[in-house]
Image (cartoon, rainbow, N blue to C red; front, top):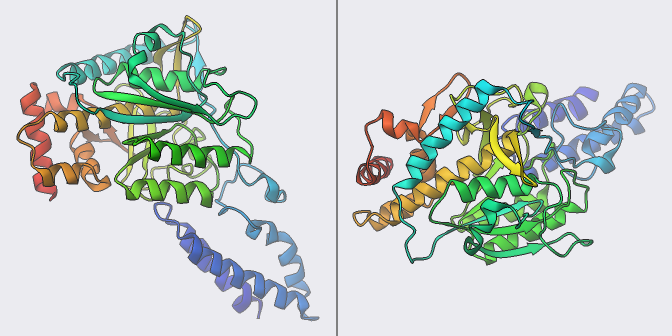
Length: 398
């Protein structure tokens, strides 16, 4: 009886949860209800003393809230702590950084400059990128030089109505985007003052996503990751992506100890891992679990915080590199007089951008390594050659 009521439904639930690219919450919830009912029925049966202990042991797993993944961040006995964010990236000073990794990062960024340097900043509507993070330090030298590209800003932190960054995380993200794009403007959405989120932060993120949509963001950048899914964030992102917006999120920095983070594992979201400048993965990367996963530079990236040189590592910092590549691809297409309307429509979709990303990436041991250097390897050195390559990828994909 216990097998029919509990074990078999529980096994089906685990099978449903194993597909991390598409987690059907409603379907899983119905199975959880079946398990609850089976557990309760067994507990009411006077002869089923075994099931009573089973109910006690697994009930927290099916408590109200998000889907529980294996290798959870917190003890399952505390269902109130079902959302924990991980932004535990590294920030090193000059004497701490691996010089060989730093050299590879600098070489990669030189390639990014060549990739973006062929474009012009034209007087037309630019691609808009919304960075949802810890805000922005406007006194930063690079940021001050790009003030015109910051077109909207808002804080959802109750104690701090300004977008000023007290942590540095959001500033590093924005610096990387501003420094590695030409035809892209920035929307700054501040949802926290630190790398630590509590449950109340979820609503801030949801409102920031909605705000990004209202301000016509083309790309939403989320250098953050939860251990568990959240319906509210998932719903807001799904609505945003239905309007042909791209969402990029960090895979997580916990290595193989846990699955890739949410929302990076949500269907339609580009999940970004961190590698060195040669494409070799860092030990922080979780397991690759889907086609929408790419790795790019996220190790020993030069940055600044409060006028001091720092070097940042983490999937959080790989996200703005991938975002910058996507924005630059869109800019090449927008400036291409030979691009057909149907090709632009395809490029503006998740499938189309995936196809171009695959062309711009090399097959690695665990992930596809996204790098503009692939254009040089494939013989596309001029603006026109890059535009032609994008058209051909889209025509083939269509």
